Image 1 (cartoon, helix red, strand yellow):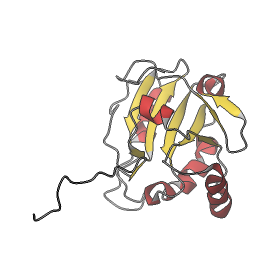
Image 2: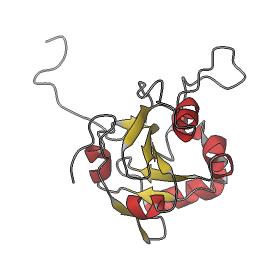
Image 3: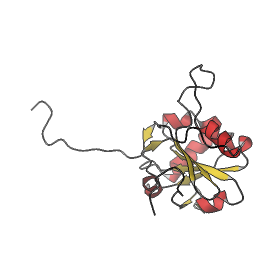
Image 4: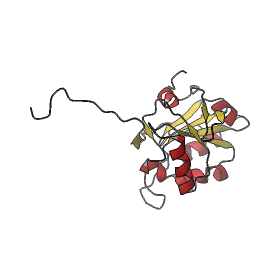
Amino acid sequence: MSRNGNIGERVAEFTLPDLDGRSSSLEDTIAGRRGAVVVFWSGVCSHCRRYDAYLNDFAARHDELALVVVASRQSESAGELRRTAAERGLRFAILHDTDRRVAHAWQVEQTPRVFLVDESGKLLYRGAIDNFKYPNDPEHEPYLEPAIADYLAGRPITRAETPSFGCAIEAVYYQLPKPLGS
């Protein structure tokens, strides 16, 4: 699997199982649509929880785009993800990247991280959904929605990349060579 790189280049194709074990590819999911929003997501990430309603309602707002949610967090099992989806009333499909192979290829280190791709798999936007302010906050700044609006209107995307933030998909533990203060 190749690594994702620059805006305007094709993203790495992938096929992953959903939470019931059925395989789904990015290419098949995009087929017949104008593109897709791919969201790297975690059921235990508090930052992702904030976007439950946004993701639940995504298809109603953007029926011309596929929504592809990829759970890549280390040690998050399909059973845990199913329980989370049921408890929180999540209506979107979740693909499971158990070994984080897709996250690594897409250079994802935290959740949530979103990508907007066109129907050919070309990367148009990468980053955060917004600046992590609620829509009624005067400082709220959406990032993904303006990129989608620009793309669907045939305009160049004004801001094709933003920093993202959130929960790490992998825990990094190490041992210090000697105790601190020694």
